[in-house]
Image (cartoon, rainbow, N blue to C red; front, side):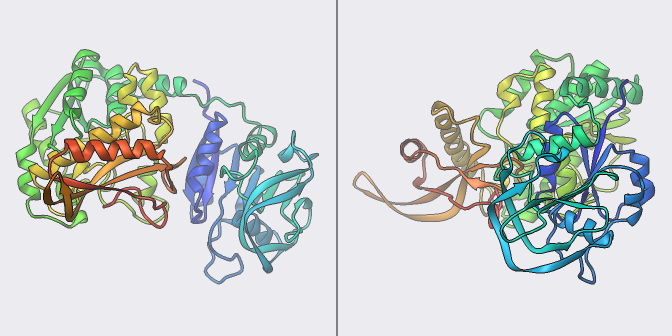
Length: 512
């Protein structure tokens, strides 16, 4: 098996750390994010072909500024510093970083030296996203300038002998022209990667590894019906066949018709033991009169586990629990990098007393778009692979306030109409996430000759490349008008529809 090439991304609390990882992978090279505190021994063990320092909010000269091990610069491995990463490289190698008289934020024209390997194939200037208060005042010994702006004399630098590069701007964001090409140049021209990271080979290698790991033992898949768990189930099933049992918990919190669709896919297309558990009443009883979103998440997360435990006992000995954890889940749940954002997800939400030998997470290294590619490689239908992202707690966190069966039905119907009309308008692949929310707001309306006092439905649609930041989607007015008209006319107890035009940040994508 061909050795997997690795670009290691060292995170200094960078806002765009995941974007860097994704852009590198778009170059068919595997990337992994680790915190700046990672030991030099661990870095050596990973044996990366190259290292990228992310940006970050700190000043490198501040007392508690995040720093990596200086031995990184002695490994003989190419290093690319981005924004704070460039400043840190400068600071640690004897250059000078100062606070700028004039800050640079936004898209700026950068004069570049296109004789550099980093800018091969570029014109002599390039529009790039700047976002910095500090700047490199003096380059370290052995470095030369390869980029500048009107207010930043050292916008890019290189040490050809040691393969160290720094750029003050952010190549990973869409605002930077040909940003992915810059990363591609670093990965191929400087690090010497060949690009062997492909979803087809990932699927084959993962199936092989699962066969070796699980063998003839039994596995239980916690199938939620979402893209991630479905692809994880398909991968495990290809490796161990009937030794996999998929337990699908129908908790009543899925979207309209979704439970039936999931059952049909896995019973007709896969040779798998499929168990559907009707647990709607059980979940709704636990959630009765619970309004706090964090409490909802914890109740649902724990109840999932209890159901799995009970079903596992019916099956007999089960050695492995399969979960659809993906890479953003790992990062956002506080495993290794960053603050804990999600209180219930595929990681970090399991009680300590789960009765399984080991948890298997075959998608743990993948981003969502990569998961979809694997799903198609495995023969999953497109409607399932491209299903809208759905939170672990399901509709429970899209019903604001307490949850009742009646409220769920209102939301299911409204959400179905929204998704149907988005698809009819041909927007279902261009909008990254869209859904309806049943607010706890009731307002006065007039329907026919009658005064009404009914619920408000909020529509949410965002465009994003990484789900860490997002912009609200400018859906055509005529589409919104049709959605609103249908919801008010077809869904009982709704007399008002609003559209959320808030980005992330300051809002989150979900309402709860």
